[in-house]
Length: 400
Image: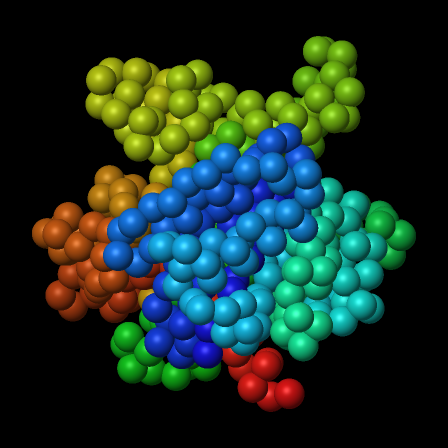
């Protein structure tokens, strides 16, 4: 069964065509600059790459080009679009309406659209992509939506409520939603298989660390707390996002700098984090390089990042009453030897202890990096959100 996985942005359409249940990616790519010109980059599993400048006034034209490239010419991987059994869409925000992946219906699309104010940069783009797919593909091709927030709908109220007047939760849906749920769900389930234990018996702290980062406490296969909040701004220091700050810092800066809410949002989301602290970069690799070269502010940003990760790991172990396994995933989590070393240093009181040789040798690959005798298993587990979206889509379609 061939599943097309779509991750749409306001001016982009990222995709993978995945052969299920093997999980083999037949092709992947991105339609970019939608509405302001257009281009497509299409990569095959044999390494060949096709690029073309196009005219994409809307997501519909981008979707049509994608279908053409997949099914015609020398870069085709299918003979006909009808070979695509279903389409799975990543959707950032499902709010309290969706606690699992669902088949696309008109009511589902309208609901996603109705909560766009909770994810104004994402949900409208997801709706555009779903409707473009409806126009271009056969009406008999089922579509499924997989929500970043769904996995976190198992959090108890004490974990997701904020200490603001309760009426704002009722009026405006203000609460902790959490994100990266698809990644946390994939890596924790994968870990349970790797160690041969039922996930229902495990207490896991999952660290998804990249340009955007979040940490989740997973007890018995269910998310009970997570670091991102009402938006993906909350929690850890990230590439350009501040992470958690005292709310009075926000109002104080706004007053001193005479900033509008939109300007303050831009400052916190796009000018802060590693970039704001270091003054030189939002990329973790460049941050580490600058620190090695003596940039004190870059070193400070790195120290803040690692310290905050360590605090969340400890906090979530406390919240669950123990910890059986620690996962590092995401671009930084999978590929930063230094981060894993510093986060796990002096954590033997929790049972966390890693083997430095394994930490170095296994960088970037799926591996158990625990020291011999460690009570807690520490793993690198590369995430694969696209596979999980395809898997959810396959299961829903097969149940029809």
